[in-house]
Image 1 (spheres, rainbow, N blue to C red):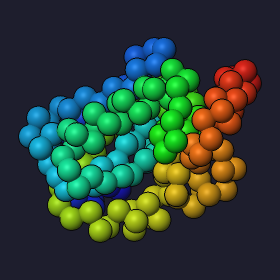
Image 2 (image 1 turned 180 degrees about the vertical axis):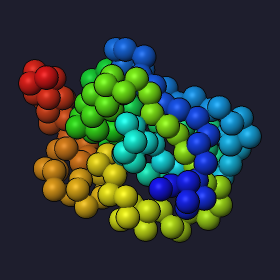
Image 3 (image 1 turned 60 degrees about the vertical axis):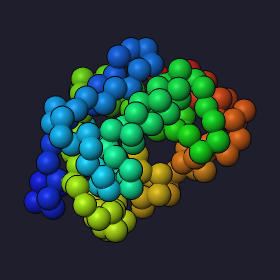
Image 4 (image 1 turned 90 degrees about the horizontal axis):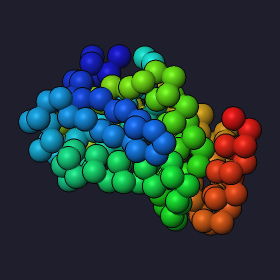
Length: 155
């Protein structure tokens, strides 16, 4: 459990349909934490782990922007991929919100946490590497847009 690893719940994540991914800070002081490792837990499952060398506030602003753009069908190289956007929408629609946890301090343990928890929306986790490349990253915007349309057609 993340809490046993020094993580604390600092807020929550929600989806404002149709395409706004929102990060809410319930612990205001956590906004200035950095460096830090953060995690998102939805429905009791750790779905994403990441790090920031800046502040959590800056990183979460970037998260909101990148995921929201992808949810609106606007992809960019290196940004949120279609599979991840689709899964954020599916999970946050089903569970209504998720927990946002963080641990202030050195970030060198991030890889170990990813190996241990194997979060499905970390694009470099073991389970993610089983997905096709187009479901792990955006290397070609046209391919990403087509994949996004295919995912949404099947839902």
